Length: 331
Image 1 (tube, one colour):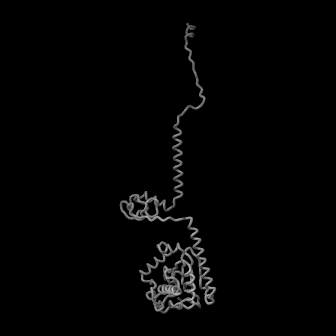
Image 2 (cartoon, one colour):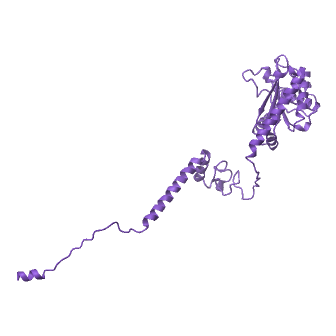
Image 3 (cartoon, one colour):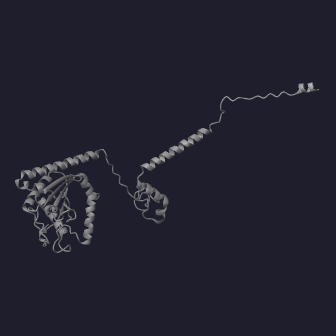
């Protein structure tokens, strides 16, 4: 019986399959990797934009998201209106103040040749140096004017050639406290006029005084009127010497607000006439009202005229008659 059971006992075969490598997982990993690469690209692009954006633009963007509907709801100038990349409260990026409908603002497009700008600046500087050399030559030729060399200061600036005729303690250019031109000043202006008439440049004249006040105070005839009258008297002398009056773009008096020697406000060197021979770029900025220096001077003029402290030079008439006793021997 036992022998029979052994014969019919089933035989179990256990087969172990040894793997020869990893099984196939499909292409899902490629999609995950592509998403990762895309996210990293977007991250580095964001880092680059944040690094290349100015602080003001970043503040404008932040303000836009803080109050995105401020302009749309309340009108007026939005927080991101003036200098931000995204204009607060609207879609029209051409507006400058508040909400402006598309097409309401006419945009003037001006093509600027950036490559030609350095060449133009070099030509303007070369012309200013030529004018400076001609003025120096004219002074050297005249024995009388040769003595005034130390009182004629010339410098080439970004606006053109600045010629400043300054006073000396023993040789003033005008009568004390008046706009009467001395004979040697008249002769010097005549030589300058002949040189300037040969160049295609326009000029501005600015009068300056020292800080010595008039005895009547600022309510009467003051350094403001005196500086303007002296600048206008210099203009008349230039025209009398033959310069084309259309070359003169501006005549202004600045009293003692821009001294050459700030440490000694009553020094004779602060009493001067400044003639700016403008280059084309400075002339265009002045005519368009976009010259920053000219704009600042005109803003000062406007404020002082409104307050009654500034009197612009008269178009005609001799300014010397409007004199008043000085508190000191300056001006």
